Length: 75
Ligand SMILES: [Zn+2]
Ligand SMILES: [Zn+2]
Image 1 (tube, rainbow, N blue to C red):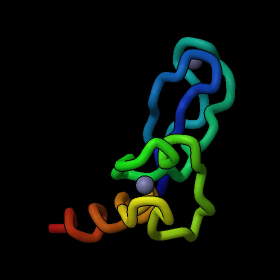
Image 2 (image 1 turned 180 degrees about the vertical axis):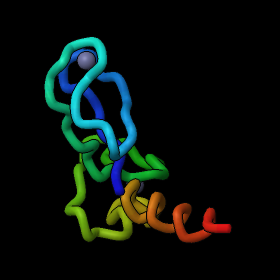
Image 3 (image 1 turned 180 degrees about the horizontal axis):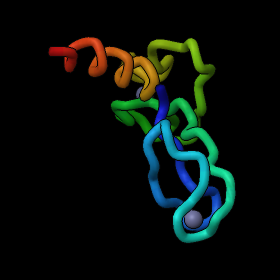
């Protein structure tokens, strides 16, 4: 699944974590961003969970890239 982060301190956590070690507040899911960031528009856009490609530069979205890496990483 998708990585999470603390909305207060910005610390990154894996999907299994639910609360920040430092702040004790609930983590939020990372936005689905462009993985390539090849245009200035990319970084401003948050994609839907099921969007696979950035419509600005054609790169995979973060969620799609993560899913791809997960499939490739299985041994
Ligand atoms: Zn925190
Ligand atoms: Zn892009």
